[in-house]
Image 1 (tube, rainbow, N blue to C red):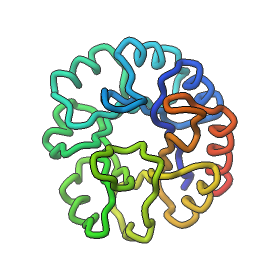
Image 2: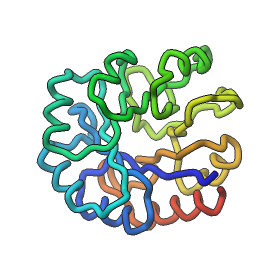
Image 3: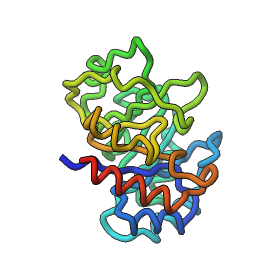
Length: 206
């Protein structure tokens, strides 16, 4: 199975277009004001409208009010939701969209139980745990914490870059890799050469 690539944290139309041209499978837009990669509805709308067909758009939220998510969905053509907070399965399903639940991995994380709890998810995104940081930290975690028999599609995040993408594919065999800071020139500004390397290396390692 080919490992897909999602690049998260776009804030510029030209960066998203560059990623699409390089063959990215999905782009992530962050709707979380504390994040340096947060986008407004108007900016997100401009990015999405510029994209060609067959690029999945993922909207990232952290313990957001349902009314805010509804407002974003009314204006921005989002294909899939990604929840990075303490959202329950019931809250994740409220919006009639496929959803990904992010799990910040700790030594005592019981992934099998979490899979049962979020059985309706389109996938689980596994990221590094840092107190008070909801993803995008640029830090990784011990991949040996991931059980080999996961039932849901696994999206691997946390500290990924062109330097370790091949190893991530070979060791974990995830459904997808999710990268943000590892392909940036600055927070929210993507580096086209790094994006190209990441996508190429991931595809070659599959």
